[in-house]
Length: 327
Image (cartoon, rainbow, N blue to C red):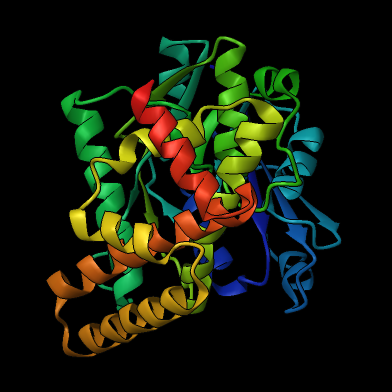
């Protein structure tokens, strides 16, 4: 079996990092074949000092850097790793005891694999509506992958729970640290161009404990939109083209709101404020259906505003959409 380096970037999440370390310590994969590398991405909450007092049943190393983002932190971790196989975990997940062993088994079966494991929702943990919405969207993807509705692709390369060979990572050039969102998907496209095969492994399970505020959640789709434009213009990746193709499959109300509001400041502000209020109200009373619809519309609207701002205006968005439809 290959030696395994578990690489974890962390930033000011000492409590959730403690859960992760406890779970890593009881993995069923042989301890003599494991090492753990934690990269502290400029935390100011005492994370580095606390890590110095922890012990694990296999070699571990803590690397500190100035705050540069998760992609830069993972690059530092892989550079210091000695294992032939890299397993990425985020600091807010708890892997099941057999998670690392499941990653390794998938690579033994297919040596060119990039393996993605599921991030599952905790059974007893209170979280807001926008976190539950994300969980539901991920579950939809996992069900489709398991049913064979579509193949696993770079778009599912979420490095909260993923693995690949160290050689493949280095050959592809690692993460582009200029991307602060979707840096894993961007790397996934480069890995695929070099012949990697993406594999969904449902047995490599982790439980995910995200703690994002609503403001942080709202920033994500906007950044995804800008990131997809950057991937298209700078890297030649297909993410933006796929978004244009998929626009037609979105809910009619989401499409209408995007066409009406994107690039029109007053309309955009008014509608996003209304949707945010609806989410807050629905979350307060536990109305999941209405809240979910509002979150979907808000995510879609924010994504396309990010695309419009990166492309240079609303007209370019809809011209590109029309050109994609014609093609």
